[in-house]
Length: 245
Image 1: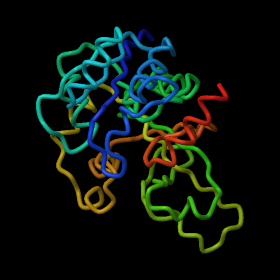
Image 2: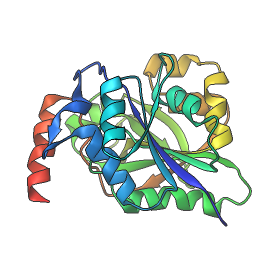
Image 3: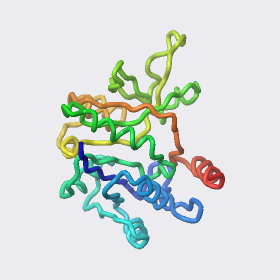
Image 4: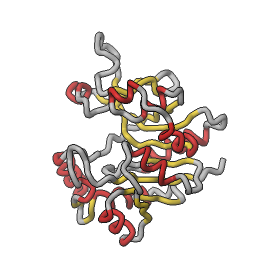
């Protein structure tokens, strides 16, 4: 199956917990540029774009030889932002890579794209990543989104709460959602038109909107947790990791 896949990196300058994190230095370059370069270096995509609301990020990417798209308005979430940017672009699959994921690795992205190559019936709207966790503090942390799946690794639900409830811990495995999404273009463009439901409103997790509207989300198991930069402590971890590479 020939499949045209592109990557889009939503890069909103203001962040709730860590303002301007995308422009922080990581080994001599801003975080967002490191993420762009890492995504480009996978050689999995026909094009890679940064989609931003900030002129400084736009100029940084363009002046570094990359491709950037300036958002025309404010959006509630990254999927809304990239849906608007992707509308005129020809693509079968669009992968949303978070701008604060400079350590994104090729094997996980390959596994996401393989989902759609195998799904010849077009039953799966989007795919995303999960990895096993066991630390109780992480399981209980509301900033760590957990996911439960069926026997086919289709998502049943995402939550900031510890799911499933640990009534009996024997043999129980928890999975944390890693916010990298691969969409069929039609499913991505449908997202802003779908009404936000009560579960998404409660959890503030955009993937729930697809579940509430009956779409299938295939979860791909990865062993790579990576380092997402949400708070200043994460940036220090990323800098230490960068020195080791």
